[in-house]
Image (cartoon, rainbow, N blue to C red):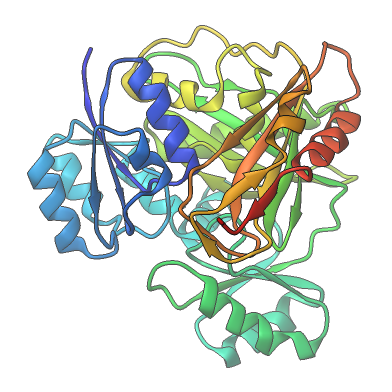
Length: 390
């Protein structure tokens, strides 16, 4: 089985997907807004376009005539996907899924209003005045997010009325796409947050990975660990909600479904129709297939008999503290000296403060303390320094 795959978005998650696809003999065209993006380094061909330009998107689809289109980011003219599906190109997981989940408004309304999933109280705003009114309705503290963004970009917490204007500015500056609208969510008093990687198949049952815990700063994931032990019944609640929402969206592939864990139960947060950044912990060999291999197999219609949790693991991101081109790295030998650790550098040509440049992954024997593993992964990641080239 050979397919020509067009990957829209070529960051570190896309790079690992390309590696998985190439191992199964597929051809991949990687697309992004800049040359030299991580996935382009391992793909068969690449294109540089603004994916919000529908005409540019049409042009490269016509040029390459892919069998499959696999979106990796939000900033895409996703409404064009319906036309591509009509022309016989399969969009992953589906044109509907891509359109709904690339915009927080569509997916939140589907989850809360159509499917009746438990979510935070929320409102929308398209102006600063509307934002003030929305904050008054949901209450303080609350969280403000652009409708189109990923990895926490543009997200901020309003802890007092004085924070509202700053939150509007952050969302406007950091949101992706051209939708000048935000979602305002009541703050959920959660104990923890989890990602439930959910795999839908063309001709098989929906499967779930063991839940992944994660810690965030500035709205972006810093560490993740797997598995997470949940109170009795909570995992079943999360799986039931994930099954409902992915079934409604249709198609085959992996979904990163995020939940808040509260003392009372599970609250739906967000969903991504692709491998999830917190799921990079699966690169530690925690499962029989990592999340990128699962996505690739599901996308190609290959059967996945089971997802087997084999050992605990943790991941910690390597962040840049400087702005430079063509960075160099020190401390690799310290991480590589650890018998159960590995380092993945993404190959980004430009470093910026807080930009994710790599990830350290670590595993342990079954039964090990996963939170101790999380701390160890963070200590190892902190040994890697991003430097200006000499």
